[in-house]
Length: 99
Image (cartoon, rainbow, N blue to C red):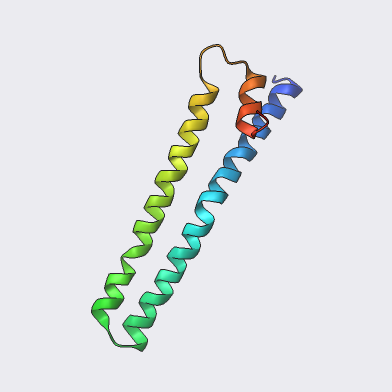
C-alpha cells in the first residue's frame, strides 16, 4: 500500500501534467476553432471553395504543432526529474517552479 506522501506526490505530478497540457492547448485550440469557422465562411458563405479547403487544412497543423511543443515541454520536465543524484523532493520542487 502506498504511503500518504507517495500518494500526495502522485497527485502533484498529475496536476502539473494537466496544467502543462491546458497551457499549451488553450491558444492552439482557439486558433484551430477559428480556422474551422473561417474555412466554413469561405466555403459556404463566400463560395470560394478552394480557399475554404485551404484554410480547412490549418487546424490539424496548428494542433500538431501544439502537441509537439507540449510533448517537448513534458520531456524537459521528465529529464529534469530523472537526472542522476536528484532526490524526489528536489525534483518536485524544480518541476513546480519553486527553484
